[in-house]
Length: 320
Image (tube, rainbow, N blue to C red; front, top):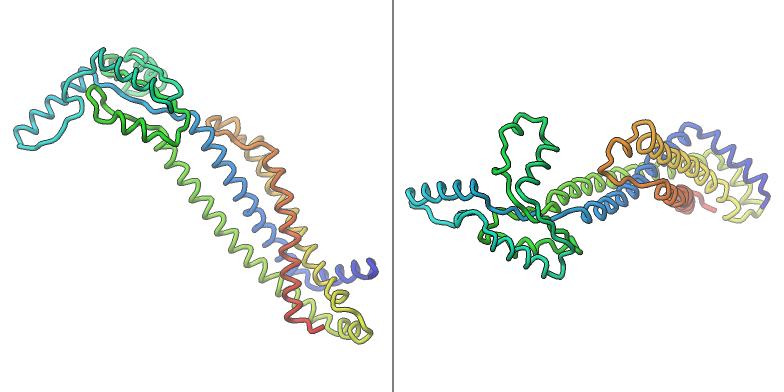
């Protein structure tokens, strides 16, 4: 098979259906950009999970005198109304013995990586550093702050073991697991990723329909040439190759546009331009290695998907 003939037929086919070819390129580019974006989004969420889960701590807040006073008042009101139940900090502020017992038990747990104690004065200092500019900060005093233990786990997945062991104990006000708040954020990100995948699938279906329709129109417009080729003994593969290559070229151009969009997004949104990497330092954004690793997948699908669609359309439409 002469390559010059195939290339000339590809050029003729693309020029004859220029409008539909342009529509195929755009739809393929958008669908593959969403495909690459969904892959990057999934990797980014996994990367963020590993980054934040490693930083997530369990905070065990201890009862102070104000908590004990409020608990006593709540218990008195409950007694008057006939209500029953256990009041948090109902047995008074945490004692030194209780603090030693809690710390000792934490350090003995095999899944605990480290335990850090934070006094009320240290908690007040950290609060002022973070919220000192607010109106509420001026009314907060050190004795209102709670002492706490900051617990770091070897495996953050097992946070419930620590939570269940200390919730409701004497001297403990609350057990706060930062992972719960992080999980809510990741759940939203996963929903967004699913939405992007759904849109990508819709765009892929649209692109496939356009490719099939474009190939059929191209085959119909050249039915005389294909008929002559069949009469002179050309094989089915010889006749089909130009049409398949047309779809592959259009898909490849769309894939290149998709790659350009992904690279542009990394350059102008993450690294420069908008500069999210510098503005949102709390997020561990992916680097160029992750983006470049996805480009071969985009190019491969950009070639394979239109070629397979054209091959299937020709088997059904082009009687050779």
